[in-house]
Image (cartoon, rainbow, N blue to C red):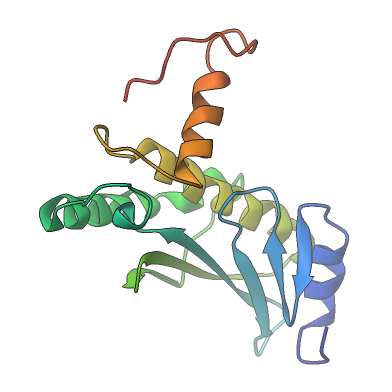
Amino acid sequence: MTADAPEKFVRAFDAHDAFERDGEGFVVTTSTFGGRVTAEETDDWALVYSLEVRVPMLSATTEEAVGPAVEEGWFDTFALRLEDAPGAVRQDLSLDAYEVERVADEAVATFEFEWGNADHVPRMTKAMAEYVEGTYVEGIVPGYQYGSPVSELLSSARSSGGDGDGSGDPMPL
C-alpha cells in the first residue's frame, strides 16, 4: 500500500475480512465479480470513495451469438437497475457520481460517494458489489447456453432455492 491511500481507509478495509489489498485500493472477495474500492482525501474529514465493478457483457458469456438488440436491451436494463445499488446499504447513501459503461466485452459500473466514517464503508461497498452481482444474475436472459462464470452463478442460484438442501425449484429462467 502506498502512502497515497488515506490511513483511515487502509485501516478500515484491512480490518474487514471481505477485502484484499490491491495497490492503492482493495478488492471485494465475496463476489464472483469482485469490485475494487479506492479512496481519496477531501478538504474536510470525509473521504471520497470509488467502487468499480466489472461484469462480462451478455455476449461474452454465451456459447452462441447474442443479437445487438438483446445485448443493448440487457445493458440498458442492467444500468437502470444498478441506480438502486445505494439502497442495498443500511445508511442513507447518496451517490456523487454513477456510471455504467461498456468497455470491450465488459460492463463497468462505477459508484462514487463521500462518507465521513471510514469504518462503515467496507460493509457499504461490499453490499453494493454484491448487489451488482445479484442484479447481474437476475438479468440473465433465458434461452442461451452460458459459460463460466455465469453457468456457475446460475447453478449456485438454482441449488440455493427451496429449503437449502439443493433440491429447490428451478429458477424461473
